[in-house]
Length: 388
Image 1 (cartoon, rainbow, N blue to C red):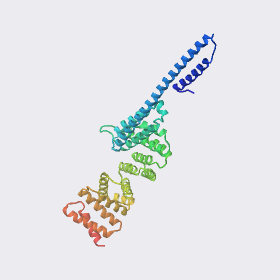
Image 2 (cartoon, rainbow, N blue to C red):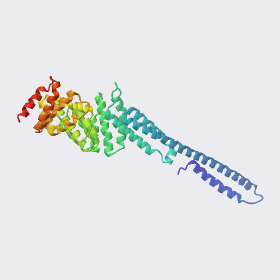
Image 3 (tube, rainbow, N blue to C red):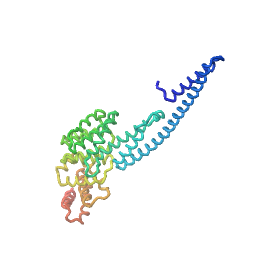
């Protein structure tokens, strides 16, 4: 066994002491050589003792110094990790990446005494997990400085995802592989056709069949390549069935459907928004504005409205439109569009009296807008429903 240096010196010390005692028991008035050897042995004994003490002191100092250094490294590590997490939460991904890199650097080289004292391997695993989480969040945001292609960011993130996936299993492995596929999609969107996102998505769902990221990214990829909506919907349904990361799934699902404009995808888009509203998901102002735009188009396109009614029952549309009308910051045009759509949905749902009341309210509001595009529609609806 390879003993520490101060341990080997201690054995030498014991050996010399035993030798000195042996020489001290040799007697004989004429044996000068033996006495000389005895004195030499005693001298060597004290030399050994001194050497062992010096070695022990040096080792003890190194141990104390390493303990102090370890505490300092842990303090710096904690500060950098906390800073990186705050920066990530604020969306400052580049600075968060630097903070995590500094945190990792403080614990990457533990040294022999750090290992003896318990080491920093736990901290190293913690910061690498934080780096992986940051990488996935950064990729989902797709945020890059103006004038920069995302592939320049993706290149340095791919390595973190690959290493993490190789050392993980189950859902964690699938999360990392799914985001690796998304990184490849972003690179491919920038013109790199050497990468295949769907290969990573396939491996991810092998590790975790209902993985929300892998399935929604895969559904996005299907529609990006103009594949069947039914096939993409299967992926979206699998993503939602995990009941994890639902807000992320909805966001990427809406984005995928918006990339392919058709009556079917437009109707599916409104169905997703209706599902979100029914599930209590919060909709931001940009989503509300797009709902207004979709209904403005549908009110002028009977074929599209029929597609929407096939995907979203009239009763669900009533709930969606009432929720949208409660939003702050709506323009007068948006209010009029949503109110007209609500009145038609009420009528379609068989609530004729409620629909008539809604149309009459719109007529009052339109008195200040004599040239509104909805005037003829409102008058015709009031006459039709008044005869019932």
